[in-house]
Image (cartoon, rainbow, N blue to C red; front, top):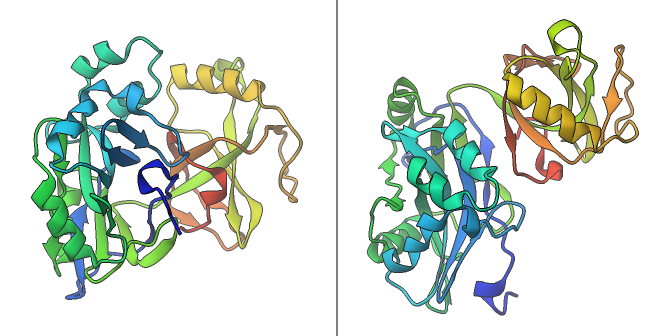
Length: 314
C-alpha cells in the first residue's frame, strides 16, 4: 500500500521483446531512444530515473513541466530525449546525461531535451495504475499541454507491422506494443507491453576487460559481458567494436577503479581484468548461440540501469 505517492520511490512497468505483429487487442507507439523517467509534478519537480535518482538538475529546461501539466499533482511516465531532425539522437542525450556540474544551463541551449510522455500513474490524489491503458492515456491527453519541452506520445490501433516499418525506415529504434486493457504494473516486466526493435539488442553487465594491444595498448581490447539467466550471472562473451577513442580512455579509467574478483562461474579462455559487476551497457548482436554467447556483438552505449535487470533475452 502506497501512502504518499508523490514521495514514493516507484519502479516503472517494463516490457518483453517481441517480433512485429498486428492485433486488435493492442495499440502501438513509436519507441523513443532516451532515458526512462518518472516525472513527479507538483509544487516542485522530481525526475526519477531507473536507479531512483532525481536527475532534474541535469535538465533545467524540463522545469516547464510544472506549467505544461494542468494538475495540482501528477506522476507521468515517459522518456527524456534530445531530438535531431525530428527523431531521438542518443549521442546528444549522452552528453546531457554525463555533463559536468555547472554546465547544465549551457548544454540545455545546445542540446535541448524533450520529455516524451506516454502514461499517467497518479492525478490529484487518485492512483490511476488500476485503470486500463487507454483510459490513462485519455486522462493524460486532457492535462498535458504540449510544447518544446514536453510531447504526448500518440498511439496507433492494431497496425503494429505498419508502424514498425514506418519507424524503421525513418531510422527510429522501433515500436512499443501495449495491450489496450492493460493496467500499470509497477516494477514488473509484463507481456502486456512488448518492445519491437529494428535490431536485436541485449543489456549486459560489464564483468571486466581484456588487455589491449597495438593502438589500444593504453585502453582495452574488449569488454567482457554477462547477464542474468534464471537468477544466475553468466558469461556472454566480449565486445570489442563500437567504441570511439574518448570512450575507450574514459571506460578504462573507470574500470580500473572497480577491479574485483571473477563474478561468474565460467572461466573464459582469454585473459581478463575482472571488475565489480556494477556497470551496464547495451550491445547490438546477430544472435545468441546455443552455448549462450553473443554472436557478432557491437557496443551501443552505457546505460543507467540496475545490473540485476539485465536478464538474458529480456
